[in-house]
Image 1 (cartoon, rainbow, N blue to C red):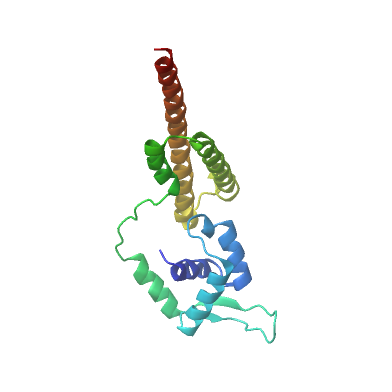
Image 2: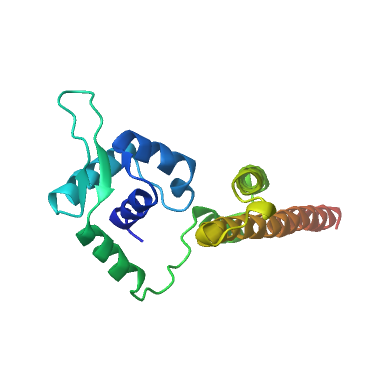
Length: 190
């Protein structure tokens, strides 16, 4: 996925100013495709220059908001992109690399970092569940938002996976630490 396609998608959902768009990224789109405010404004300008979006009401002076909408060329670009094939991306998470390093160097501080990550994933899961409760109540299930809900459920499942995996990793780290301490204690007694 690329930032231009994320912006085109967001603008098709609702024409927005740059500020509104950055807020929407902060609240929802940014959960699965993050971008800084500067990147969003820069990309909006490029999309406008390329004829994929246009400002509905260009401001006359500094501080005036432009609201953008997707033009037919932008819709065609997004439609073409949606139909393209793309292989899954490999996971690049520094925590996984830290575990590999800890296997060689020892686990000093690893348990605390795993616990910190677990707390962060627990908080993210709680936020996703709150969004689901607020935005996708069972009685309001509608065909028009089923794919958006599917994206959110993917996030919920990913956070649930990370919590289960981190529980396992914490168990391994604490088990290995106590096993190593027992072995070292036994070696000292001999």
